[in-house]
Length: 315
Ligand code: MEV
Image (cartoon, rainbow, N blue to C red; front, side):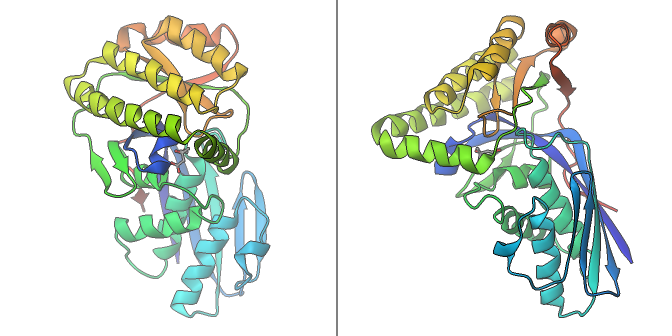
């Protein structure tokens, strides 16, 4: 028996990092996907094949002993085999068109699609159950996750998210376009988030002020999204980037790309953890080609993203 699931990557439009401390963020899923297939096998092994490498291990190994970025898949397969009390193995295959390690949710999409494909070998879990399992798996590589990324990869669309209350779908379909540009600087979400924690500990007053500013900004953005006011949204993008600069997750390479984005679009900012990774430029239909050409002419890796409204898909 075989099962398959796919989940989209994501962009954090507003509120990354502050969301870890309880502030609301606004995210959307994008039209790049991870597809995971899972199969029961007779041999008591967990076998994972992917375009970033393979992993073949016996079940029941302590997760702390596994030094591989495929660890979340091992965690999921092992946990599900244990729960089912089955003396069999699981073979997993991962295919992805989400660029890895650059803030576009590739590991969250892997956790969501992995949780769905593996658990569907034994049961018919709900999206809520899959999300819970996916967040557990993500914690094996990033303990302090806010859960925002796995949530948007599960449900798709555009949403507000906060750690306490979970997500609320934003029902309007905004007409903005996103041009995503990759700085080609890989980052570790865990270490960038740890850096922000240090900033917070050393600057409690300033960080608390920034959390309040970000909360206010997200409130304004929710309204602007409903009214589809793209130009004004661009101003909020620029403002949000200033907050991200203050908490120290930017660098010269990112600023160079953002400067181009700010000139040519309504506004550009880091998306995700920062320290490297991607930025997005917010634009509209009329200006899309021109925005793209500015990055293309300078040989940046870029793509125009669409919002994915499907989220997790199983088949
Ligand atoms: C990473 O994509 C987003 C962060 O806000 C961390 C998190 O929300 O878990 C930096």
